[in-house]
Image: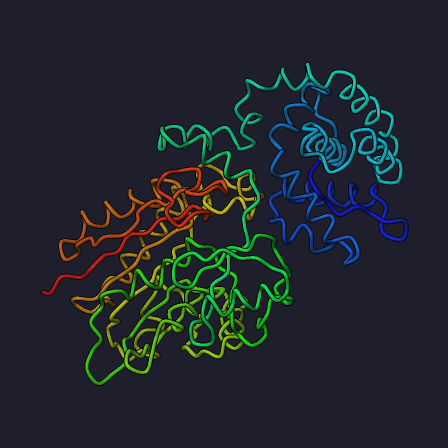
Length: 454
């Protein structure tokens, strides 16, 4: 069994957690993000319910197929969500957080105490049948791609076509728990010093690169040494490649700071990494854009904790006419980081709701938005400057397909070495896919473009 928050005699009952989890699952199915779906959950229940919900979302394809076997006529949304919650948690005994009989009993109790009280007998009958016929029912769903891989069918088929050598490894990695990756602030500490600080708390972390660490066991950020003092940030290892890719090899101008634009910058992790990479000899003047005011405030919070400064603007990067003349004096940028909006298909380990919220049509819509951003920002780059385009996506249309189309339209752009598609790892040395020299990281895409002199 996997570990899971176990209600104590004084803590919340399991049926309460299951009921809240089912309500959150119903909200996700209606289009809400998991964070929004969990917001109404009482604080005393939230941590346990989130752990259960994430496990349910990682096993939802199988659960839905089993529910179809048990009840071909789809029940009401609340009853269906409760059934799928129990089936997702119970079908695989190796991963079940509780015994199957406990889950069934507590799920029926949740049904009795909720709006679906009249359906408690139906819930009980379905789940008791599942216990009796578990092996046959699971086998009957094995051939269904959505049940086998716990992703929508279109997602599975698209990956099979675009990544014929790696699609299975990617899907397996997506269903694993993501590690907790840290980036040390080299202005305030070193990898060795921070590992010593962790060791003093009996925490072990493996170093990756010149500023990355992978914790063996995740920890609340407030308990990390030096968190409040800005010694460290939480950032995936793939995302940590952005700042060095953009800055490495750039020629600093004489007599002024390098002008850098971080478009679509919230929550500010890459903005901070850029600023942490600066020095007195190589200063940066960073402008960070975010179209959403609430998310832009998170950039300010991130920089304040780390003791860093940037010009943070609430603005649409695709409309430079609204902010470039007034705030930047029409001065071209020496470097631009475009972490473009995307499907987030590379970070489903951390956000398992994404796979169930996305529709295949979203890819084309987001690719069009990415193309608009590239077209709008390219004129703001100085000749000889660099633009780093990245997305946390594994889909071709949001990565290499996007960049190839851009290069075909812009004869003044040339491509510099960059990783391209980084595919998610599964936690072992080298990752699930052989392109992962940095070990366990999310799915990402990087392309580095240089503007040729006129």
